[in-house]
Length: 276
View (tube, helix red, strand yellow):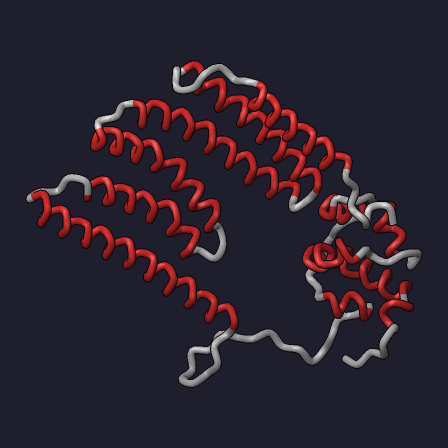
């Protein structure tokens, strides 16, 4: 599709009509589109009537919601003559970008698993030769298994890898801390570690939910800072109750105050496309 330089910038009416057409194809109202982009429906109305153009800071998000490319948006119409790469099983057929990416993830997962296994095996051999039995290498072994369980979903899965790793972190951390405390003979490794794990895992799940619902927006960042302030307060309180730390001092309160200030700034921050 050939366009003269400046055509996309001048033909606001055509771009607006194209946005309206794509929005209706998706079965969305102006208010629903605005909600997905975290802007006002008035801004969407201005786009569709040709009174203004989407701000550059929101253009990629708009294209993603409407299922179009930036070139199609700026051109005010769908491009023809382009084909998506297909995955072919015929000998010598070129592989798609997705299959190549999946292959890289697979090899990365294999190398990660093999590296951990080789490291544990080496420690077992050294420990047996030096001590005559397995001692410190057991700590290395359970740490390696825990590391594998947490990071393997993130490396192996293209979609849902982060959620899978967070689920593994939630399930395996407390058993790992229990086994570690037994091997080291230090009870506080489990008692204090389990309490910190529960608080941290809850915080991470809440952060994941916030960003999935609000996207990468100022509101999401502000909510994250609020949760972080709450986490700092809870951690200090629990450590004090368990006798693992002194009572919170001015530095702890200052960090909480800074997080609250950062949250306030984030909530009052407006994206450039909202007022247009």
